[in-house]
Length: 418
Image: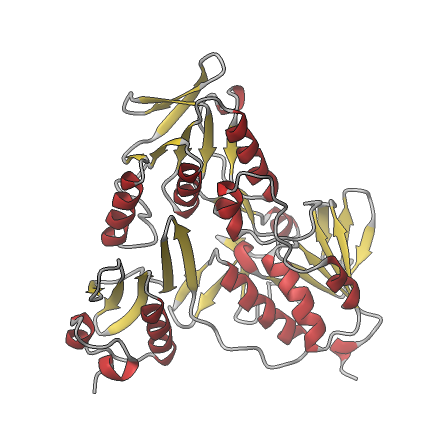
């Protein structure tokens, strides 16, 4: 029996969201015979996060979050859940963690899957006004939904024009809220996509009745007798019955830093998800790794990355061959539109916009650095997403003239350069 597969060993996982849960089940499947203890300070059975800013807000009735796995699945796989418990300390020398109830748990392997928490910007008056919410957890979604149901006028100001802000805007518009969205930069989604996609979603949201404002840096909030005045640096202000802050996340890496692990923009890991300390791994939103594909350090906030790294860490700990580095992919649902993104477009110097023939809105944007394909954004276009994923995995050179010709059927053989 391998040293890694002893029944008397214990693997502790800190964090029970997509990364931690998928790791626990993948670890058991990979052959781990010892204990698996999955710990999270959220008392809820681990649940899917992406629907929280979408269907969970758009629904009228209170709905429980969709569990990642049924409760009996953990029992069947002999995975011990400790929910509503917070890890206070990682003692890497004594190979143990200390919980908030003073319990000490020894580990042979430790996996940190702590993810991130909603970033709270430094805005004057944030703590002194009613009904200011973030959107990160099932409890957050429930509070926003309850507040909307209680509000007579339902005027909502959303701070932040990234994916979370836009998805919340779409969901609350479906509920009939009067939504104003304030973005600090000059366009929506400025860090993750092209101006063309930004313009498309600007037109989409304004067409649905959202009041969008860019170049708006919020500097203070004030209580106006039960409502909130949102004041921007340029002197403009907006009245809200509730405010939703969606400006990104703060990485939960304090435990790792206090334990002496290498961490900058996330806990640093190698291609095997190993940290700077032997026997300690990190996966998901909380870690960054050097990508051989992109030749730079990257940190990915996506369910796909969480699941992929979970499989890598599980395989490595059990002495199995880990899967190859995947191509990153992301998605966002807003109203009737689905945005699917594969690859990372950072560093592109050319993009080709391909409009498909037909009455429906269906297009894709292909990002290039010279002849190298970097990424594809597909709107209501699953074919472009699938084809782009295949070509990125294979590092194929594209015939750009064929690609941008809508009369050319979008198939790999039709757009691969000879």
